[in-house]
Image (cartoon, rainbow, N blue to C red; front, side):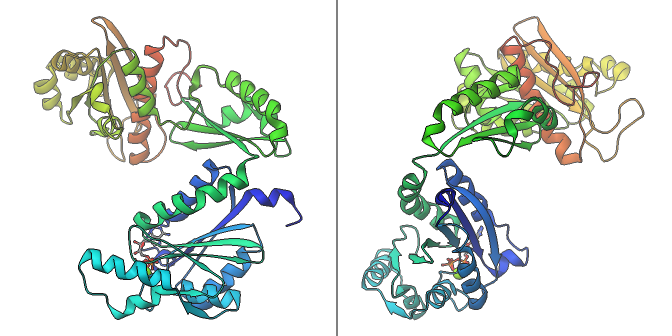
Length: 428
Ligand code: ATP
Ligand code: MG
C-alpha cells in the first residue's frame, strides 16, 4: 500500500464456465467497473476464470496484490460448480465455518417462499473463518467479504438481479470513503469524430497531467471524462473543465452522462414541443430510442415504419412521382415523409429517415450507407441532409438514428454551420 494512488483503484473478477466458453456475456464486470468509476474508484484489471477452485484462488491471490479493492461475481450458488467460497477460504488459508446469521437468512427465505429447502442450499451458510456474510435480499446466496493482503474482497452472486442490489448496499459506502478525494465529470458530444476531438483536446489529454481527460466513442456519441485524484487540484479541475467545454463548442450536448434521446426529450419538454417519426431503413430504431426513456410520452406522439414505397405513399402521402423521379432515398422523399407524418400526428416536429443500410442495394451515386434525413418543424421549416455512414448494416442504422436526433437538436437550438459527422459534402 505504499503508493497512495492505489487507494483509488480496484479490480474485478468474473467467475463462471459459461463466461469462459462464450455462452454468456460478462455484463457484471462492465456494470461494476462503470459503477465504481461513477463512485470515483478506477478499475485497473479484469480477470475471468472458470468454475475451478484452484484457478479462482489463484486469481484472488493475484488481484489482491494489484489494488486495495476486489469485487468478484459468480460461484456462490448451492451447486457443485459453485466454488467461490471454497476458493476464498483456500486463498485465505482458512477452513469453512457455518455462519448462524446466514442460516437464519436462509431459513427465513425458504419460509417466505413456502418452498422446501434442498439440502444442497446448506453450503451457502458456510464462510471462511475470518470472512463476514453479506445479506442477499433477492436470492439465497449470501455474499462474502474478507481481507487478503490488505485488499478488501467482496464476493457477490452471479445473477445481475442479485448482484446489483448487493453492490449498491455494500460497496457504496466503502467507495465513498475511498473516493472522497476524487472528482469525476462526464461531458457528451454528438456529431464530431473522436479523432477531431482528440486533436482539439490534445494538450489536455496528456497522460501525465494532474487532471486526466479521456474520450470514449460509440456510434457518433463521444463521452469525455475528466477526473482529478486530489481535492487540492480542484481549481485545476474547474479550469480543465472550462477549456474542454469551450473546445467542444456546439457539439457538446450534455455536461452529464445523459443519453442523446434523453437530452432530446428534455429539450422538447422545455419547448413544450411534440414529435413524430417516419422511418424506413432504421425500421423503428428512432422510435425505440425515444420510447426507451421514461416519460417519453410527454413529447413523443408515435410514428410510422414505412419500409416499402407503397407504404410511404399510402401512409404518409408521399406522391408517386416523387419516388419515380428522385427515388425513395432522396431529399424530396424524406421531406414528404416528414411533412406527411407531422400533419397526420399533429405534432410540432417530425423526423424522417430513408437510406440504404446494406449490405446490398447500393448504386454508384447512392452507395451503401447513403441515408437522407429530414426534420420538419413549424408549418414551413424544413432541413434535409444527406449522410454517408461507414460501417455494417447495424452501424449504419444506429448512426442514422443518432444523426437524426443530432439534426433535431441543432435546429431546435438554432445551431448553424456545424456539419455533423458523416454528413455528406461536409466533413466535420
Ligand atoms: P446461483 O445461486 O444462481 O448459482 P451464483 O452466484 O452461483 O448464483 P453463477 O452460478 O456463477 O452465480 O451464475 C448464475 C447466473 O448468473 C448465470 O447463469 C448467469 O445468468 C448470471 N451471471 C453469472 N456471472 C455473470 C456475469 N459475469 N455477467 C452476467 N451474468 C452473469
Ligand atoms: Mg451458480
